[in-house]
Each structure stands twice: as C-alpha cells, then as structure tokens.
Image 1 (cartoon, rainbow, N blue to C red):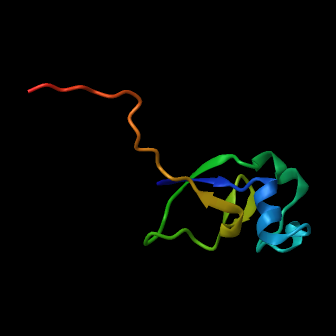
Image 2 (cartoon, rainbow, N blue to C red):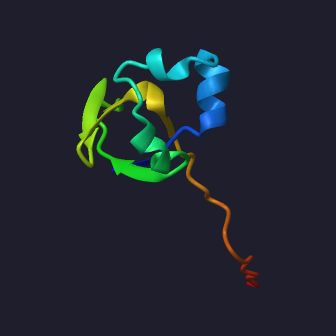
Image 3 (cartoon, rainbow, N blue to C red):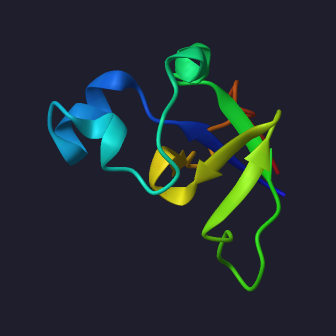
Length: 82
C-alpha cells in the first residue's frame, strides 16, 4: 500500500486551467472539495495505480491524485561510538 493525496485546487488549476472540473477523467463534483489535499492509501498493481477507482462512493481518476514521497529522515540523530 502506498500513500497518495488528492491534488489541491491550486494544483488542478495549474494542470488543467480554470475549467479543470470538466477536463479531468472522472469529473469533479463540488461536494468532493472536502478531499482537496487529503491523503489516501492505495494499492498499486505492478507499480501502477489503476486508471480510475471508487473512493467513498465517488469516481476518482489518477489525474486527481499525487503520490506522496516517503520521508526517510530520522526524527533524531543517533550517535554511536565503537
């Protein structure tokens, strides 16, 4: 399972222009605005997500989401002496 997040409204406008709602594969309903920037966990198939899927009853296409890069930075440094 990998982490993804929904694009923000600003990212949709950058990618598709001002009429972005009508240009994405599954379309975007105004009731879906609660998902802007929200993280979701998805299963990948052969390193890829499927073209479209259902999320909480809404049709979602992969042009609506962005993969979240893992953060491998430790929270604290560990000093070791030999």
